[in-house]
Image (tube, rainbow, N blue to C red; front, side, top):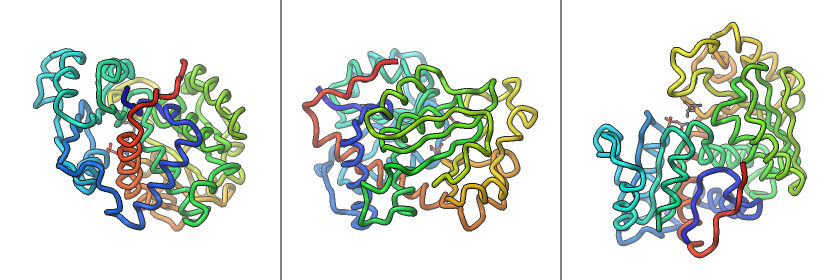
Length: 321
Ligand code: CP
Ligand code: NVA
């Protein structure tokens, strides 16, 4: 069985630490690992738009000695209705790993069930676990120091403001508590996280010393937080949905005043919409680490691919929704 990375809790706390430690090492010594030498090919597929994920995976695979094959839905038979299973049967005989950005989580779960090579979630409607690895690396770099590396996150707090029901919120909940962090999500009552994800996060937190807070009070969430984070109020595929405007989300905009209450750093997975989920003053200001965060997509994903290829024979950590 190959190892897959479909959700943040597919890595145990100890495994996540190993990946993050390697990511920190690769940020320092970019060409330290060449597991794809050959070159071995990695398929990187997109059913939705992407800038960072596309460039970081393509660059990362090349830097690991491999050959990236970037496929857009519009240029593949998958985009014309070929089934996930048939696509997987073909790809899995040719490439060494599959990275996929798609819609429902069930699609990538189906692919993983049929793949004999690692499958990596490059964003679904429900989760964006690669982004969280990069974000945890960024928080460790900026608040813990490289030397502490993997130990720098436990006991620190992460406050996410905005759409609590989207992929980023869900991944911060699972990935943050896996790192032993206190994860706080502040969102309108209409856009709270999936209760099953919250329950799973609480279960993990009980084993790592982390904690979970879901609130509709942004000030409560950010008070003293190590990192304040937000994301677009309108995720891909939600354009035109009712209740996605300022009337719903304005109290959760990350402002200089909220950053002062935190005293921490500001992260955003990007793309960002200045004047909506965050003010320009904050994202372009001194507490913002968004460019390091974007760069860390490269290091974290190289570390993840290396780790998955080095651990081919163990089962993906069980998760239950
Ligand atoms: N943060 C992120 O995943 O960016 P892209 O959509 O540009 O890949
Ligand atoms: N929540 C956003 C993240 C983009 C990287 C979306 O799904 O569009």
